[in-house]
Image 1 (cartoon, rainbow, N blue to C red):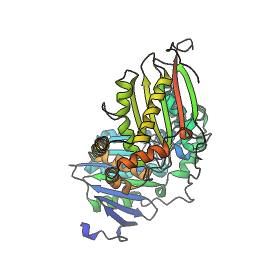
Image 2: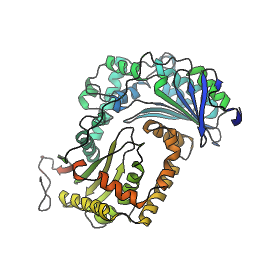
Image 3: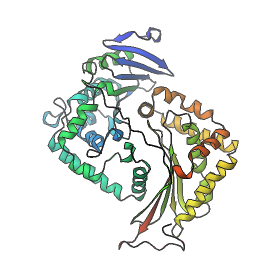
Image 4: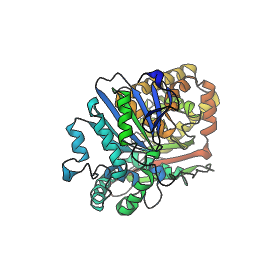
Length: 451
């Protein structure tokens, strides 16, 4: 099937219509509502398949937080076609063909993926189409995977950075479901009934709530026919897919918390509310985060790490479907006051708000972002991952437009967003204060403690 035959609105396989193409990405729609993205690449005899469901912890609520993540585990347990009893267990089948496979859950999405030899494309399409609607969601599987997830929870609870971040999101977001962590709250993970998980599965895991991505060495016509054969037979959901309509109201004052737990060193985290991925301000905010901490010549690295106040410092801007956070996190050197480091960070932000940034700083940050973006897209599976993240946060055109938008940012844009978002009433501050085994605070320099 030559490119000239790809005409918008034309049916290219049974129940599949071509809708658009740009930058090497082809978009199709199945009659059941599933979006299909094909990306032919010169990846000799390798093809990556990803099924991305537009459901994540963002779609959960109190009582069943962590449901998406728990289902991610359970959807490897089997279907009537692929199961242990028949010797066709999903993981075993994929290992036999040398697949690189797994699944991940995040706030806005869940993805299931395989990178396989090109001749195995039919098998993985068959498998993913089968577990889209035929997964066993059984009590015995919930119990075994509950133990696995509980172990993940316990490992996370031993990581001060992770625990502090979890608390920060729970305090920064009062109403929006970004409030709760993707892994879920412990009591929900421990007690959610299998029937509730099954209801969640039957609510969200349908073709009209999914994007399937195929990247690599494949024949277009063959791939389209396989998708039509396996995914095309699945009906669209019999009900509308529930949408998230909760919006986080503007924060009306600084929020602050101290977390005291066993640990070795203190941590300071500052979180500012930021817009969603589609918003044009996301690009200068991303570059601002790089100007602050990406590399040994950046502002907060020199001000904190080189000055002997912190072991490390990093800044990150989330790029989610709904508004997220800009997070600045500093791990303190022993004996350094939390307040001192917090004030140094805020003073540097105020300096940027007043004086802006230099063109040379901006260009270095732009080059770094561009290099990281293209490196992250290297190879069929990495490309599928990056494209999938764009689909979950915005759409595939956002994936193509990302670097051009980064390149268009000016120093004036950086100063503007710093003033627009990095102010006290939009700030949540968390301190991790390490304690001894007895529960007492570890000795700190004079002046440490609550404000």
